[in-house]
Image: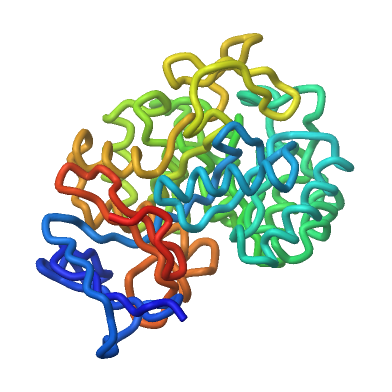
Length: 378
């Protein structure tokens, strides 16, 4: 049996705020309310302890792809992100043939059943060819509810989110279908108008896939989807805070309009995250990563990111000057709530999984614990 631990002396970020000289008690795989006499004390003076990060939009890492890799590849990618603090992850697929996506969904659903991942996100094929980004246009299709249902069924109850261009034929009916089945309908890779976006939100959409990216810019006469997504309190917006996908002013705009409770930091990572520059495949598309920025070889579109959530956390606090408590909400609590797993992860509370990250005073990652076991010991 694992030794109980008392993590003492750190600044601990709780749902109620930050406790100076706080402590977190870990007993077995969970956070406990009281420490047994045999507990080991770990002195974390001068550090922060925050909940493990929750990434609801991630395509791979460590040189491995969640869309096309083997089971071992997928586990390698998951482990890479765990070493950067992401203790809960939802793998995302890029656009592919329907038969291929249903087969992959079956494979990943097994990993979800084993507790390795928190579910599956389908980013495509139901997206706009006008805003396709790093998706193969020849494989795109309208969001026919029957096709959407095929993917949900193939995931065997493990589908967490589907990104849709809801203005396409079948889009609104598909949003309703997803909402009825408890799957997040996310508006993204869209060319929708303001009015079309409002209609999709009213139908049940609750997330904006990487807000600002792969959608029309904000206009003063034709405000487009961004204005509708920012103003509606039913929508949580994903943000890729890597310094490439968003100008700091765009991130500030999102936080100003949404507040910390309706923002979710994601990586949108591809294979190169935690691995390095070079040539990679993102689905059927070839990607070149140079200076940690991923772009399609053909056309030059940004192709996901090489971001890890520890870097997103540090940037949010040190560059964007956001309060640590707000960053914790955006990187842990908010995505956990959206995914329906906040009862077990997303905050440091007794009874929840002992998933946590230790950061130093400069917000560099120094320790990672998942289910009571150190992956990186501080």
